[in-house]
Image (tube, rainbow, N blue to C red; front, side, top):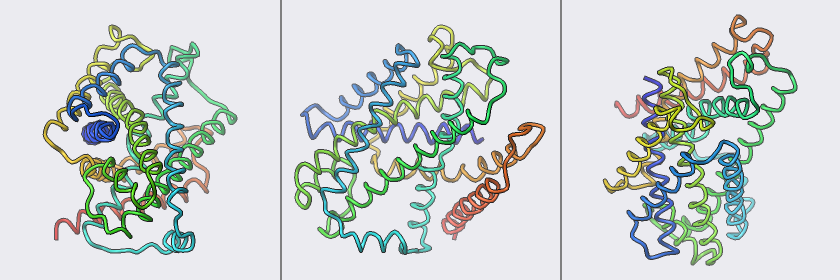
Amino acid sequence: MVALGAVIGNTIEAGADLGGIAAALILLTPVPLIALVMMAAVMIMAVQWFGSYRWILAVFRWLALVLVVYIVSAVLVHPAAVQAAHAVKLPPVRLGSGYLAMLVALVGATISPYLYIWQTSQEVEEDVSMGRRRLGDRKGTTAAALRSRAGDVMTGMAFSSVVMYCIILSTASTLYPAGVGRLSTAAQAAQALQPPAGPLAGLLFALGVIGVGFLAVPVMTMGAAYVVCDACGWKSGVSARPRDAKQFYGVIAATTVAAVAINFLGANPSHALVVAGVVQGLLAPGLLLLMMLMTNNKKLMGAWSNTRGVNILGWATTALVTAAAVALVVSAAI
């Protein structure tokens, strides 16, 4: 059930990201939106099918640098520092279903099930790339290796949180005061940013949408493939060639086609991203609970079971995420 939900959430998000790429590219080229969606999907799938793990990793690293443009955009809009700091410290809280849906979607975007799957799968890919192809070669770890992985995860999450805040700050500082209403795509947000913040801010925002889309879509489709193959016991990983891992690459192809089809149905990319976030957010409590139980199991973890500090943070996070999910379900049912 969890695997199915993760696949559905990933596919919807991949479709929304493809739509975002196309909508942003329209600002730079007159090619029809659906054609751009299909071109982007073919390019991404070609990289996944024919690129090696090391080559794909290098592409992802360079694409991640595109996220810096959101930070630059936030600086260009000259936000009111005092107001922004106050809003961060004391954000408005409402108990309506709309507010709770966005809260759960935010949880789903930051504590997403695919992140656990992606991180663990990439650890295996990294080991395989270093010649540790057998399961026995990958057993065990060291304190230094765990510190390295923890630093990697914490750095990535901190950077992504800063970028997310800059997106919120740049749009809230310009679009809301200007009275801009509902937006269907991130590209419309880029266009709306131009009058109050200048053409450079709008252009950078659009380039960020394109870069993030090309980074996110393969993560979503490959993440779905890892979930399905791990659940079914099939061989998986970009370190394997398509002929050796047919199911893995078949799932990538199927989810990519489904993601493209979402755009043929005329789905609103922004709304689709929220729906995907809500799906991932509703799955998060169960996965966090399973993770906490596994990481406290000394038979499974041995000397590497959770410390008291990690348990406090982990159980508190699980409780808060569960409370948000339950509140959304209750508010929707009333």
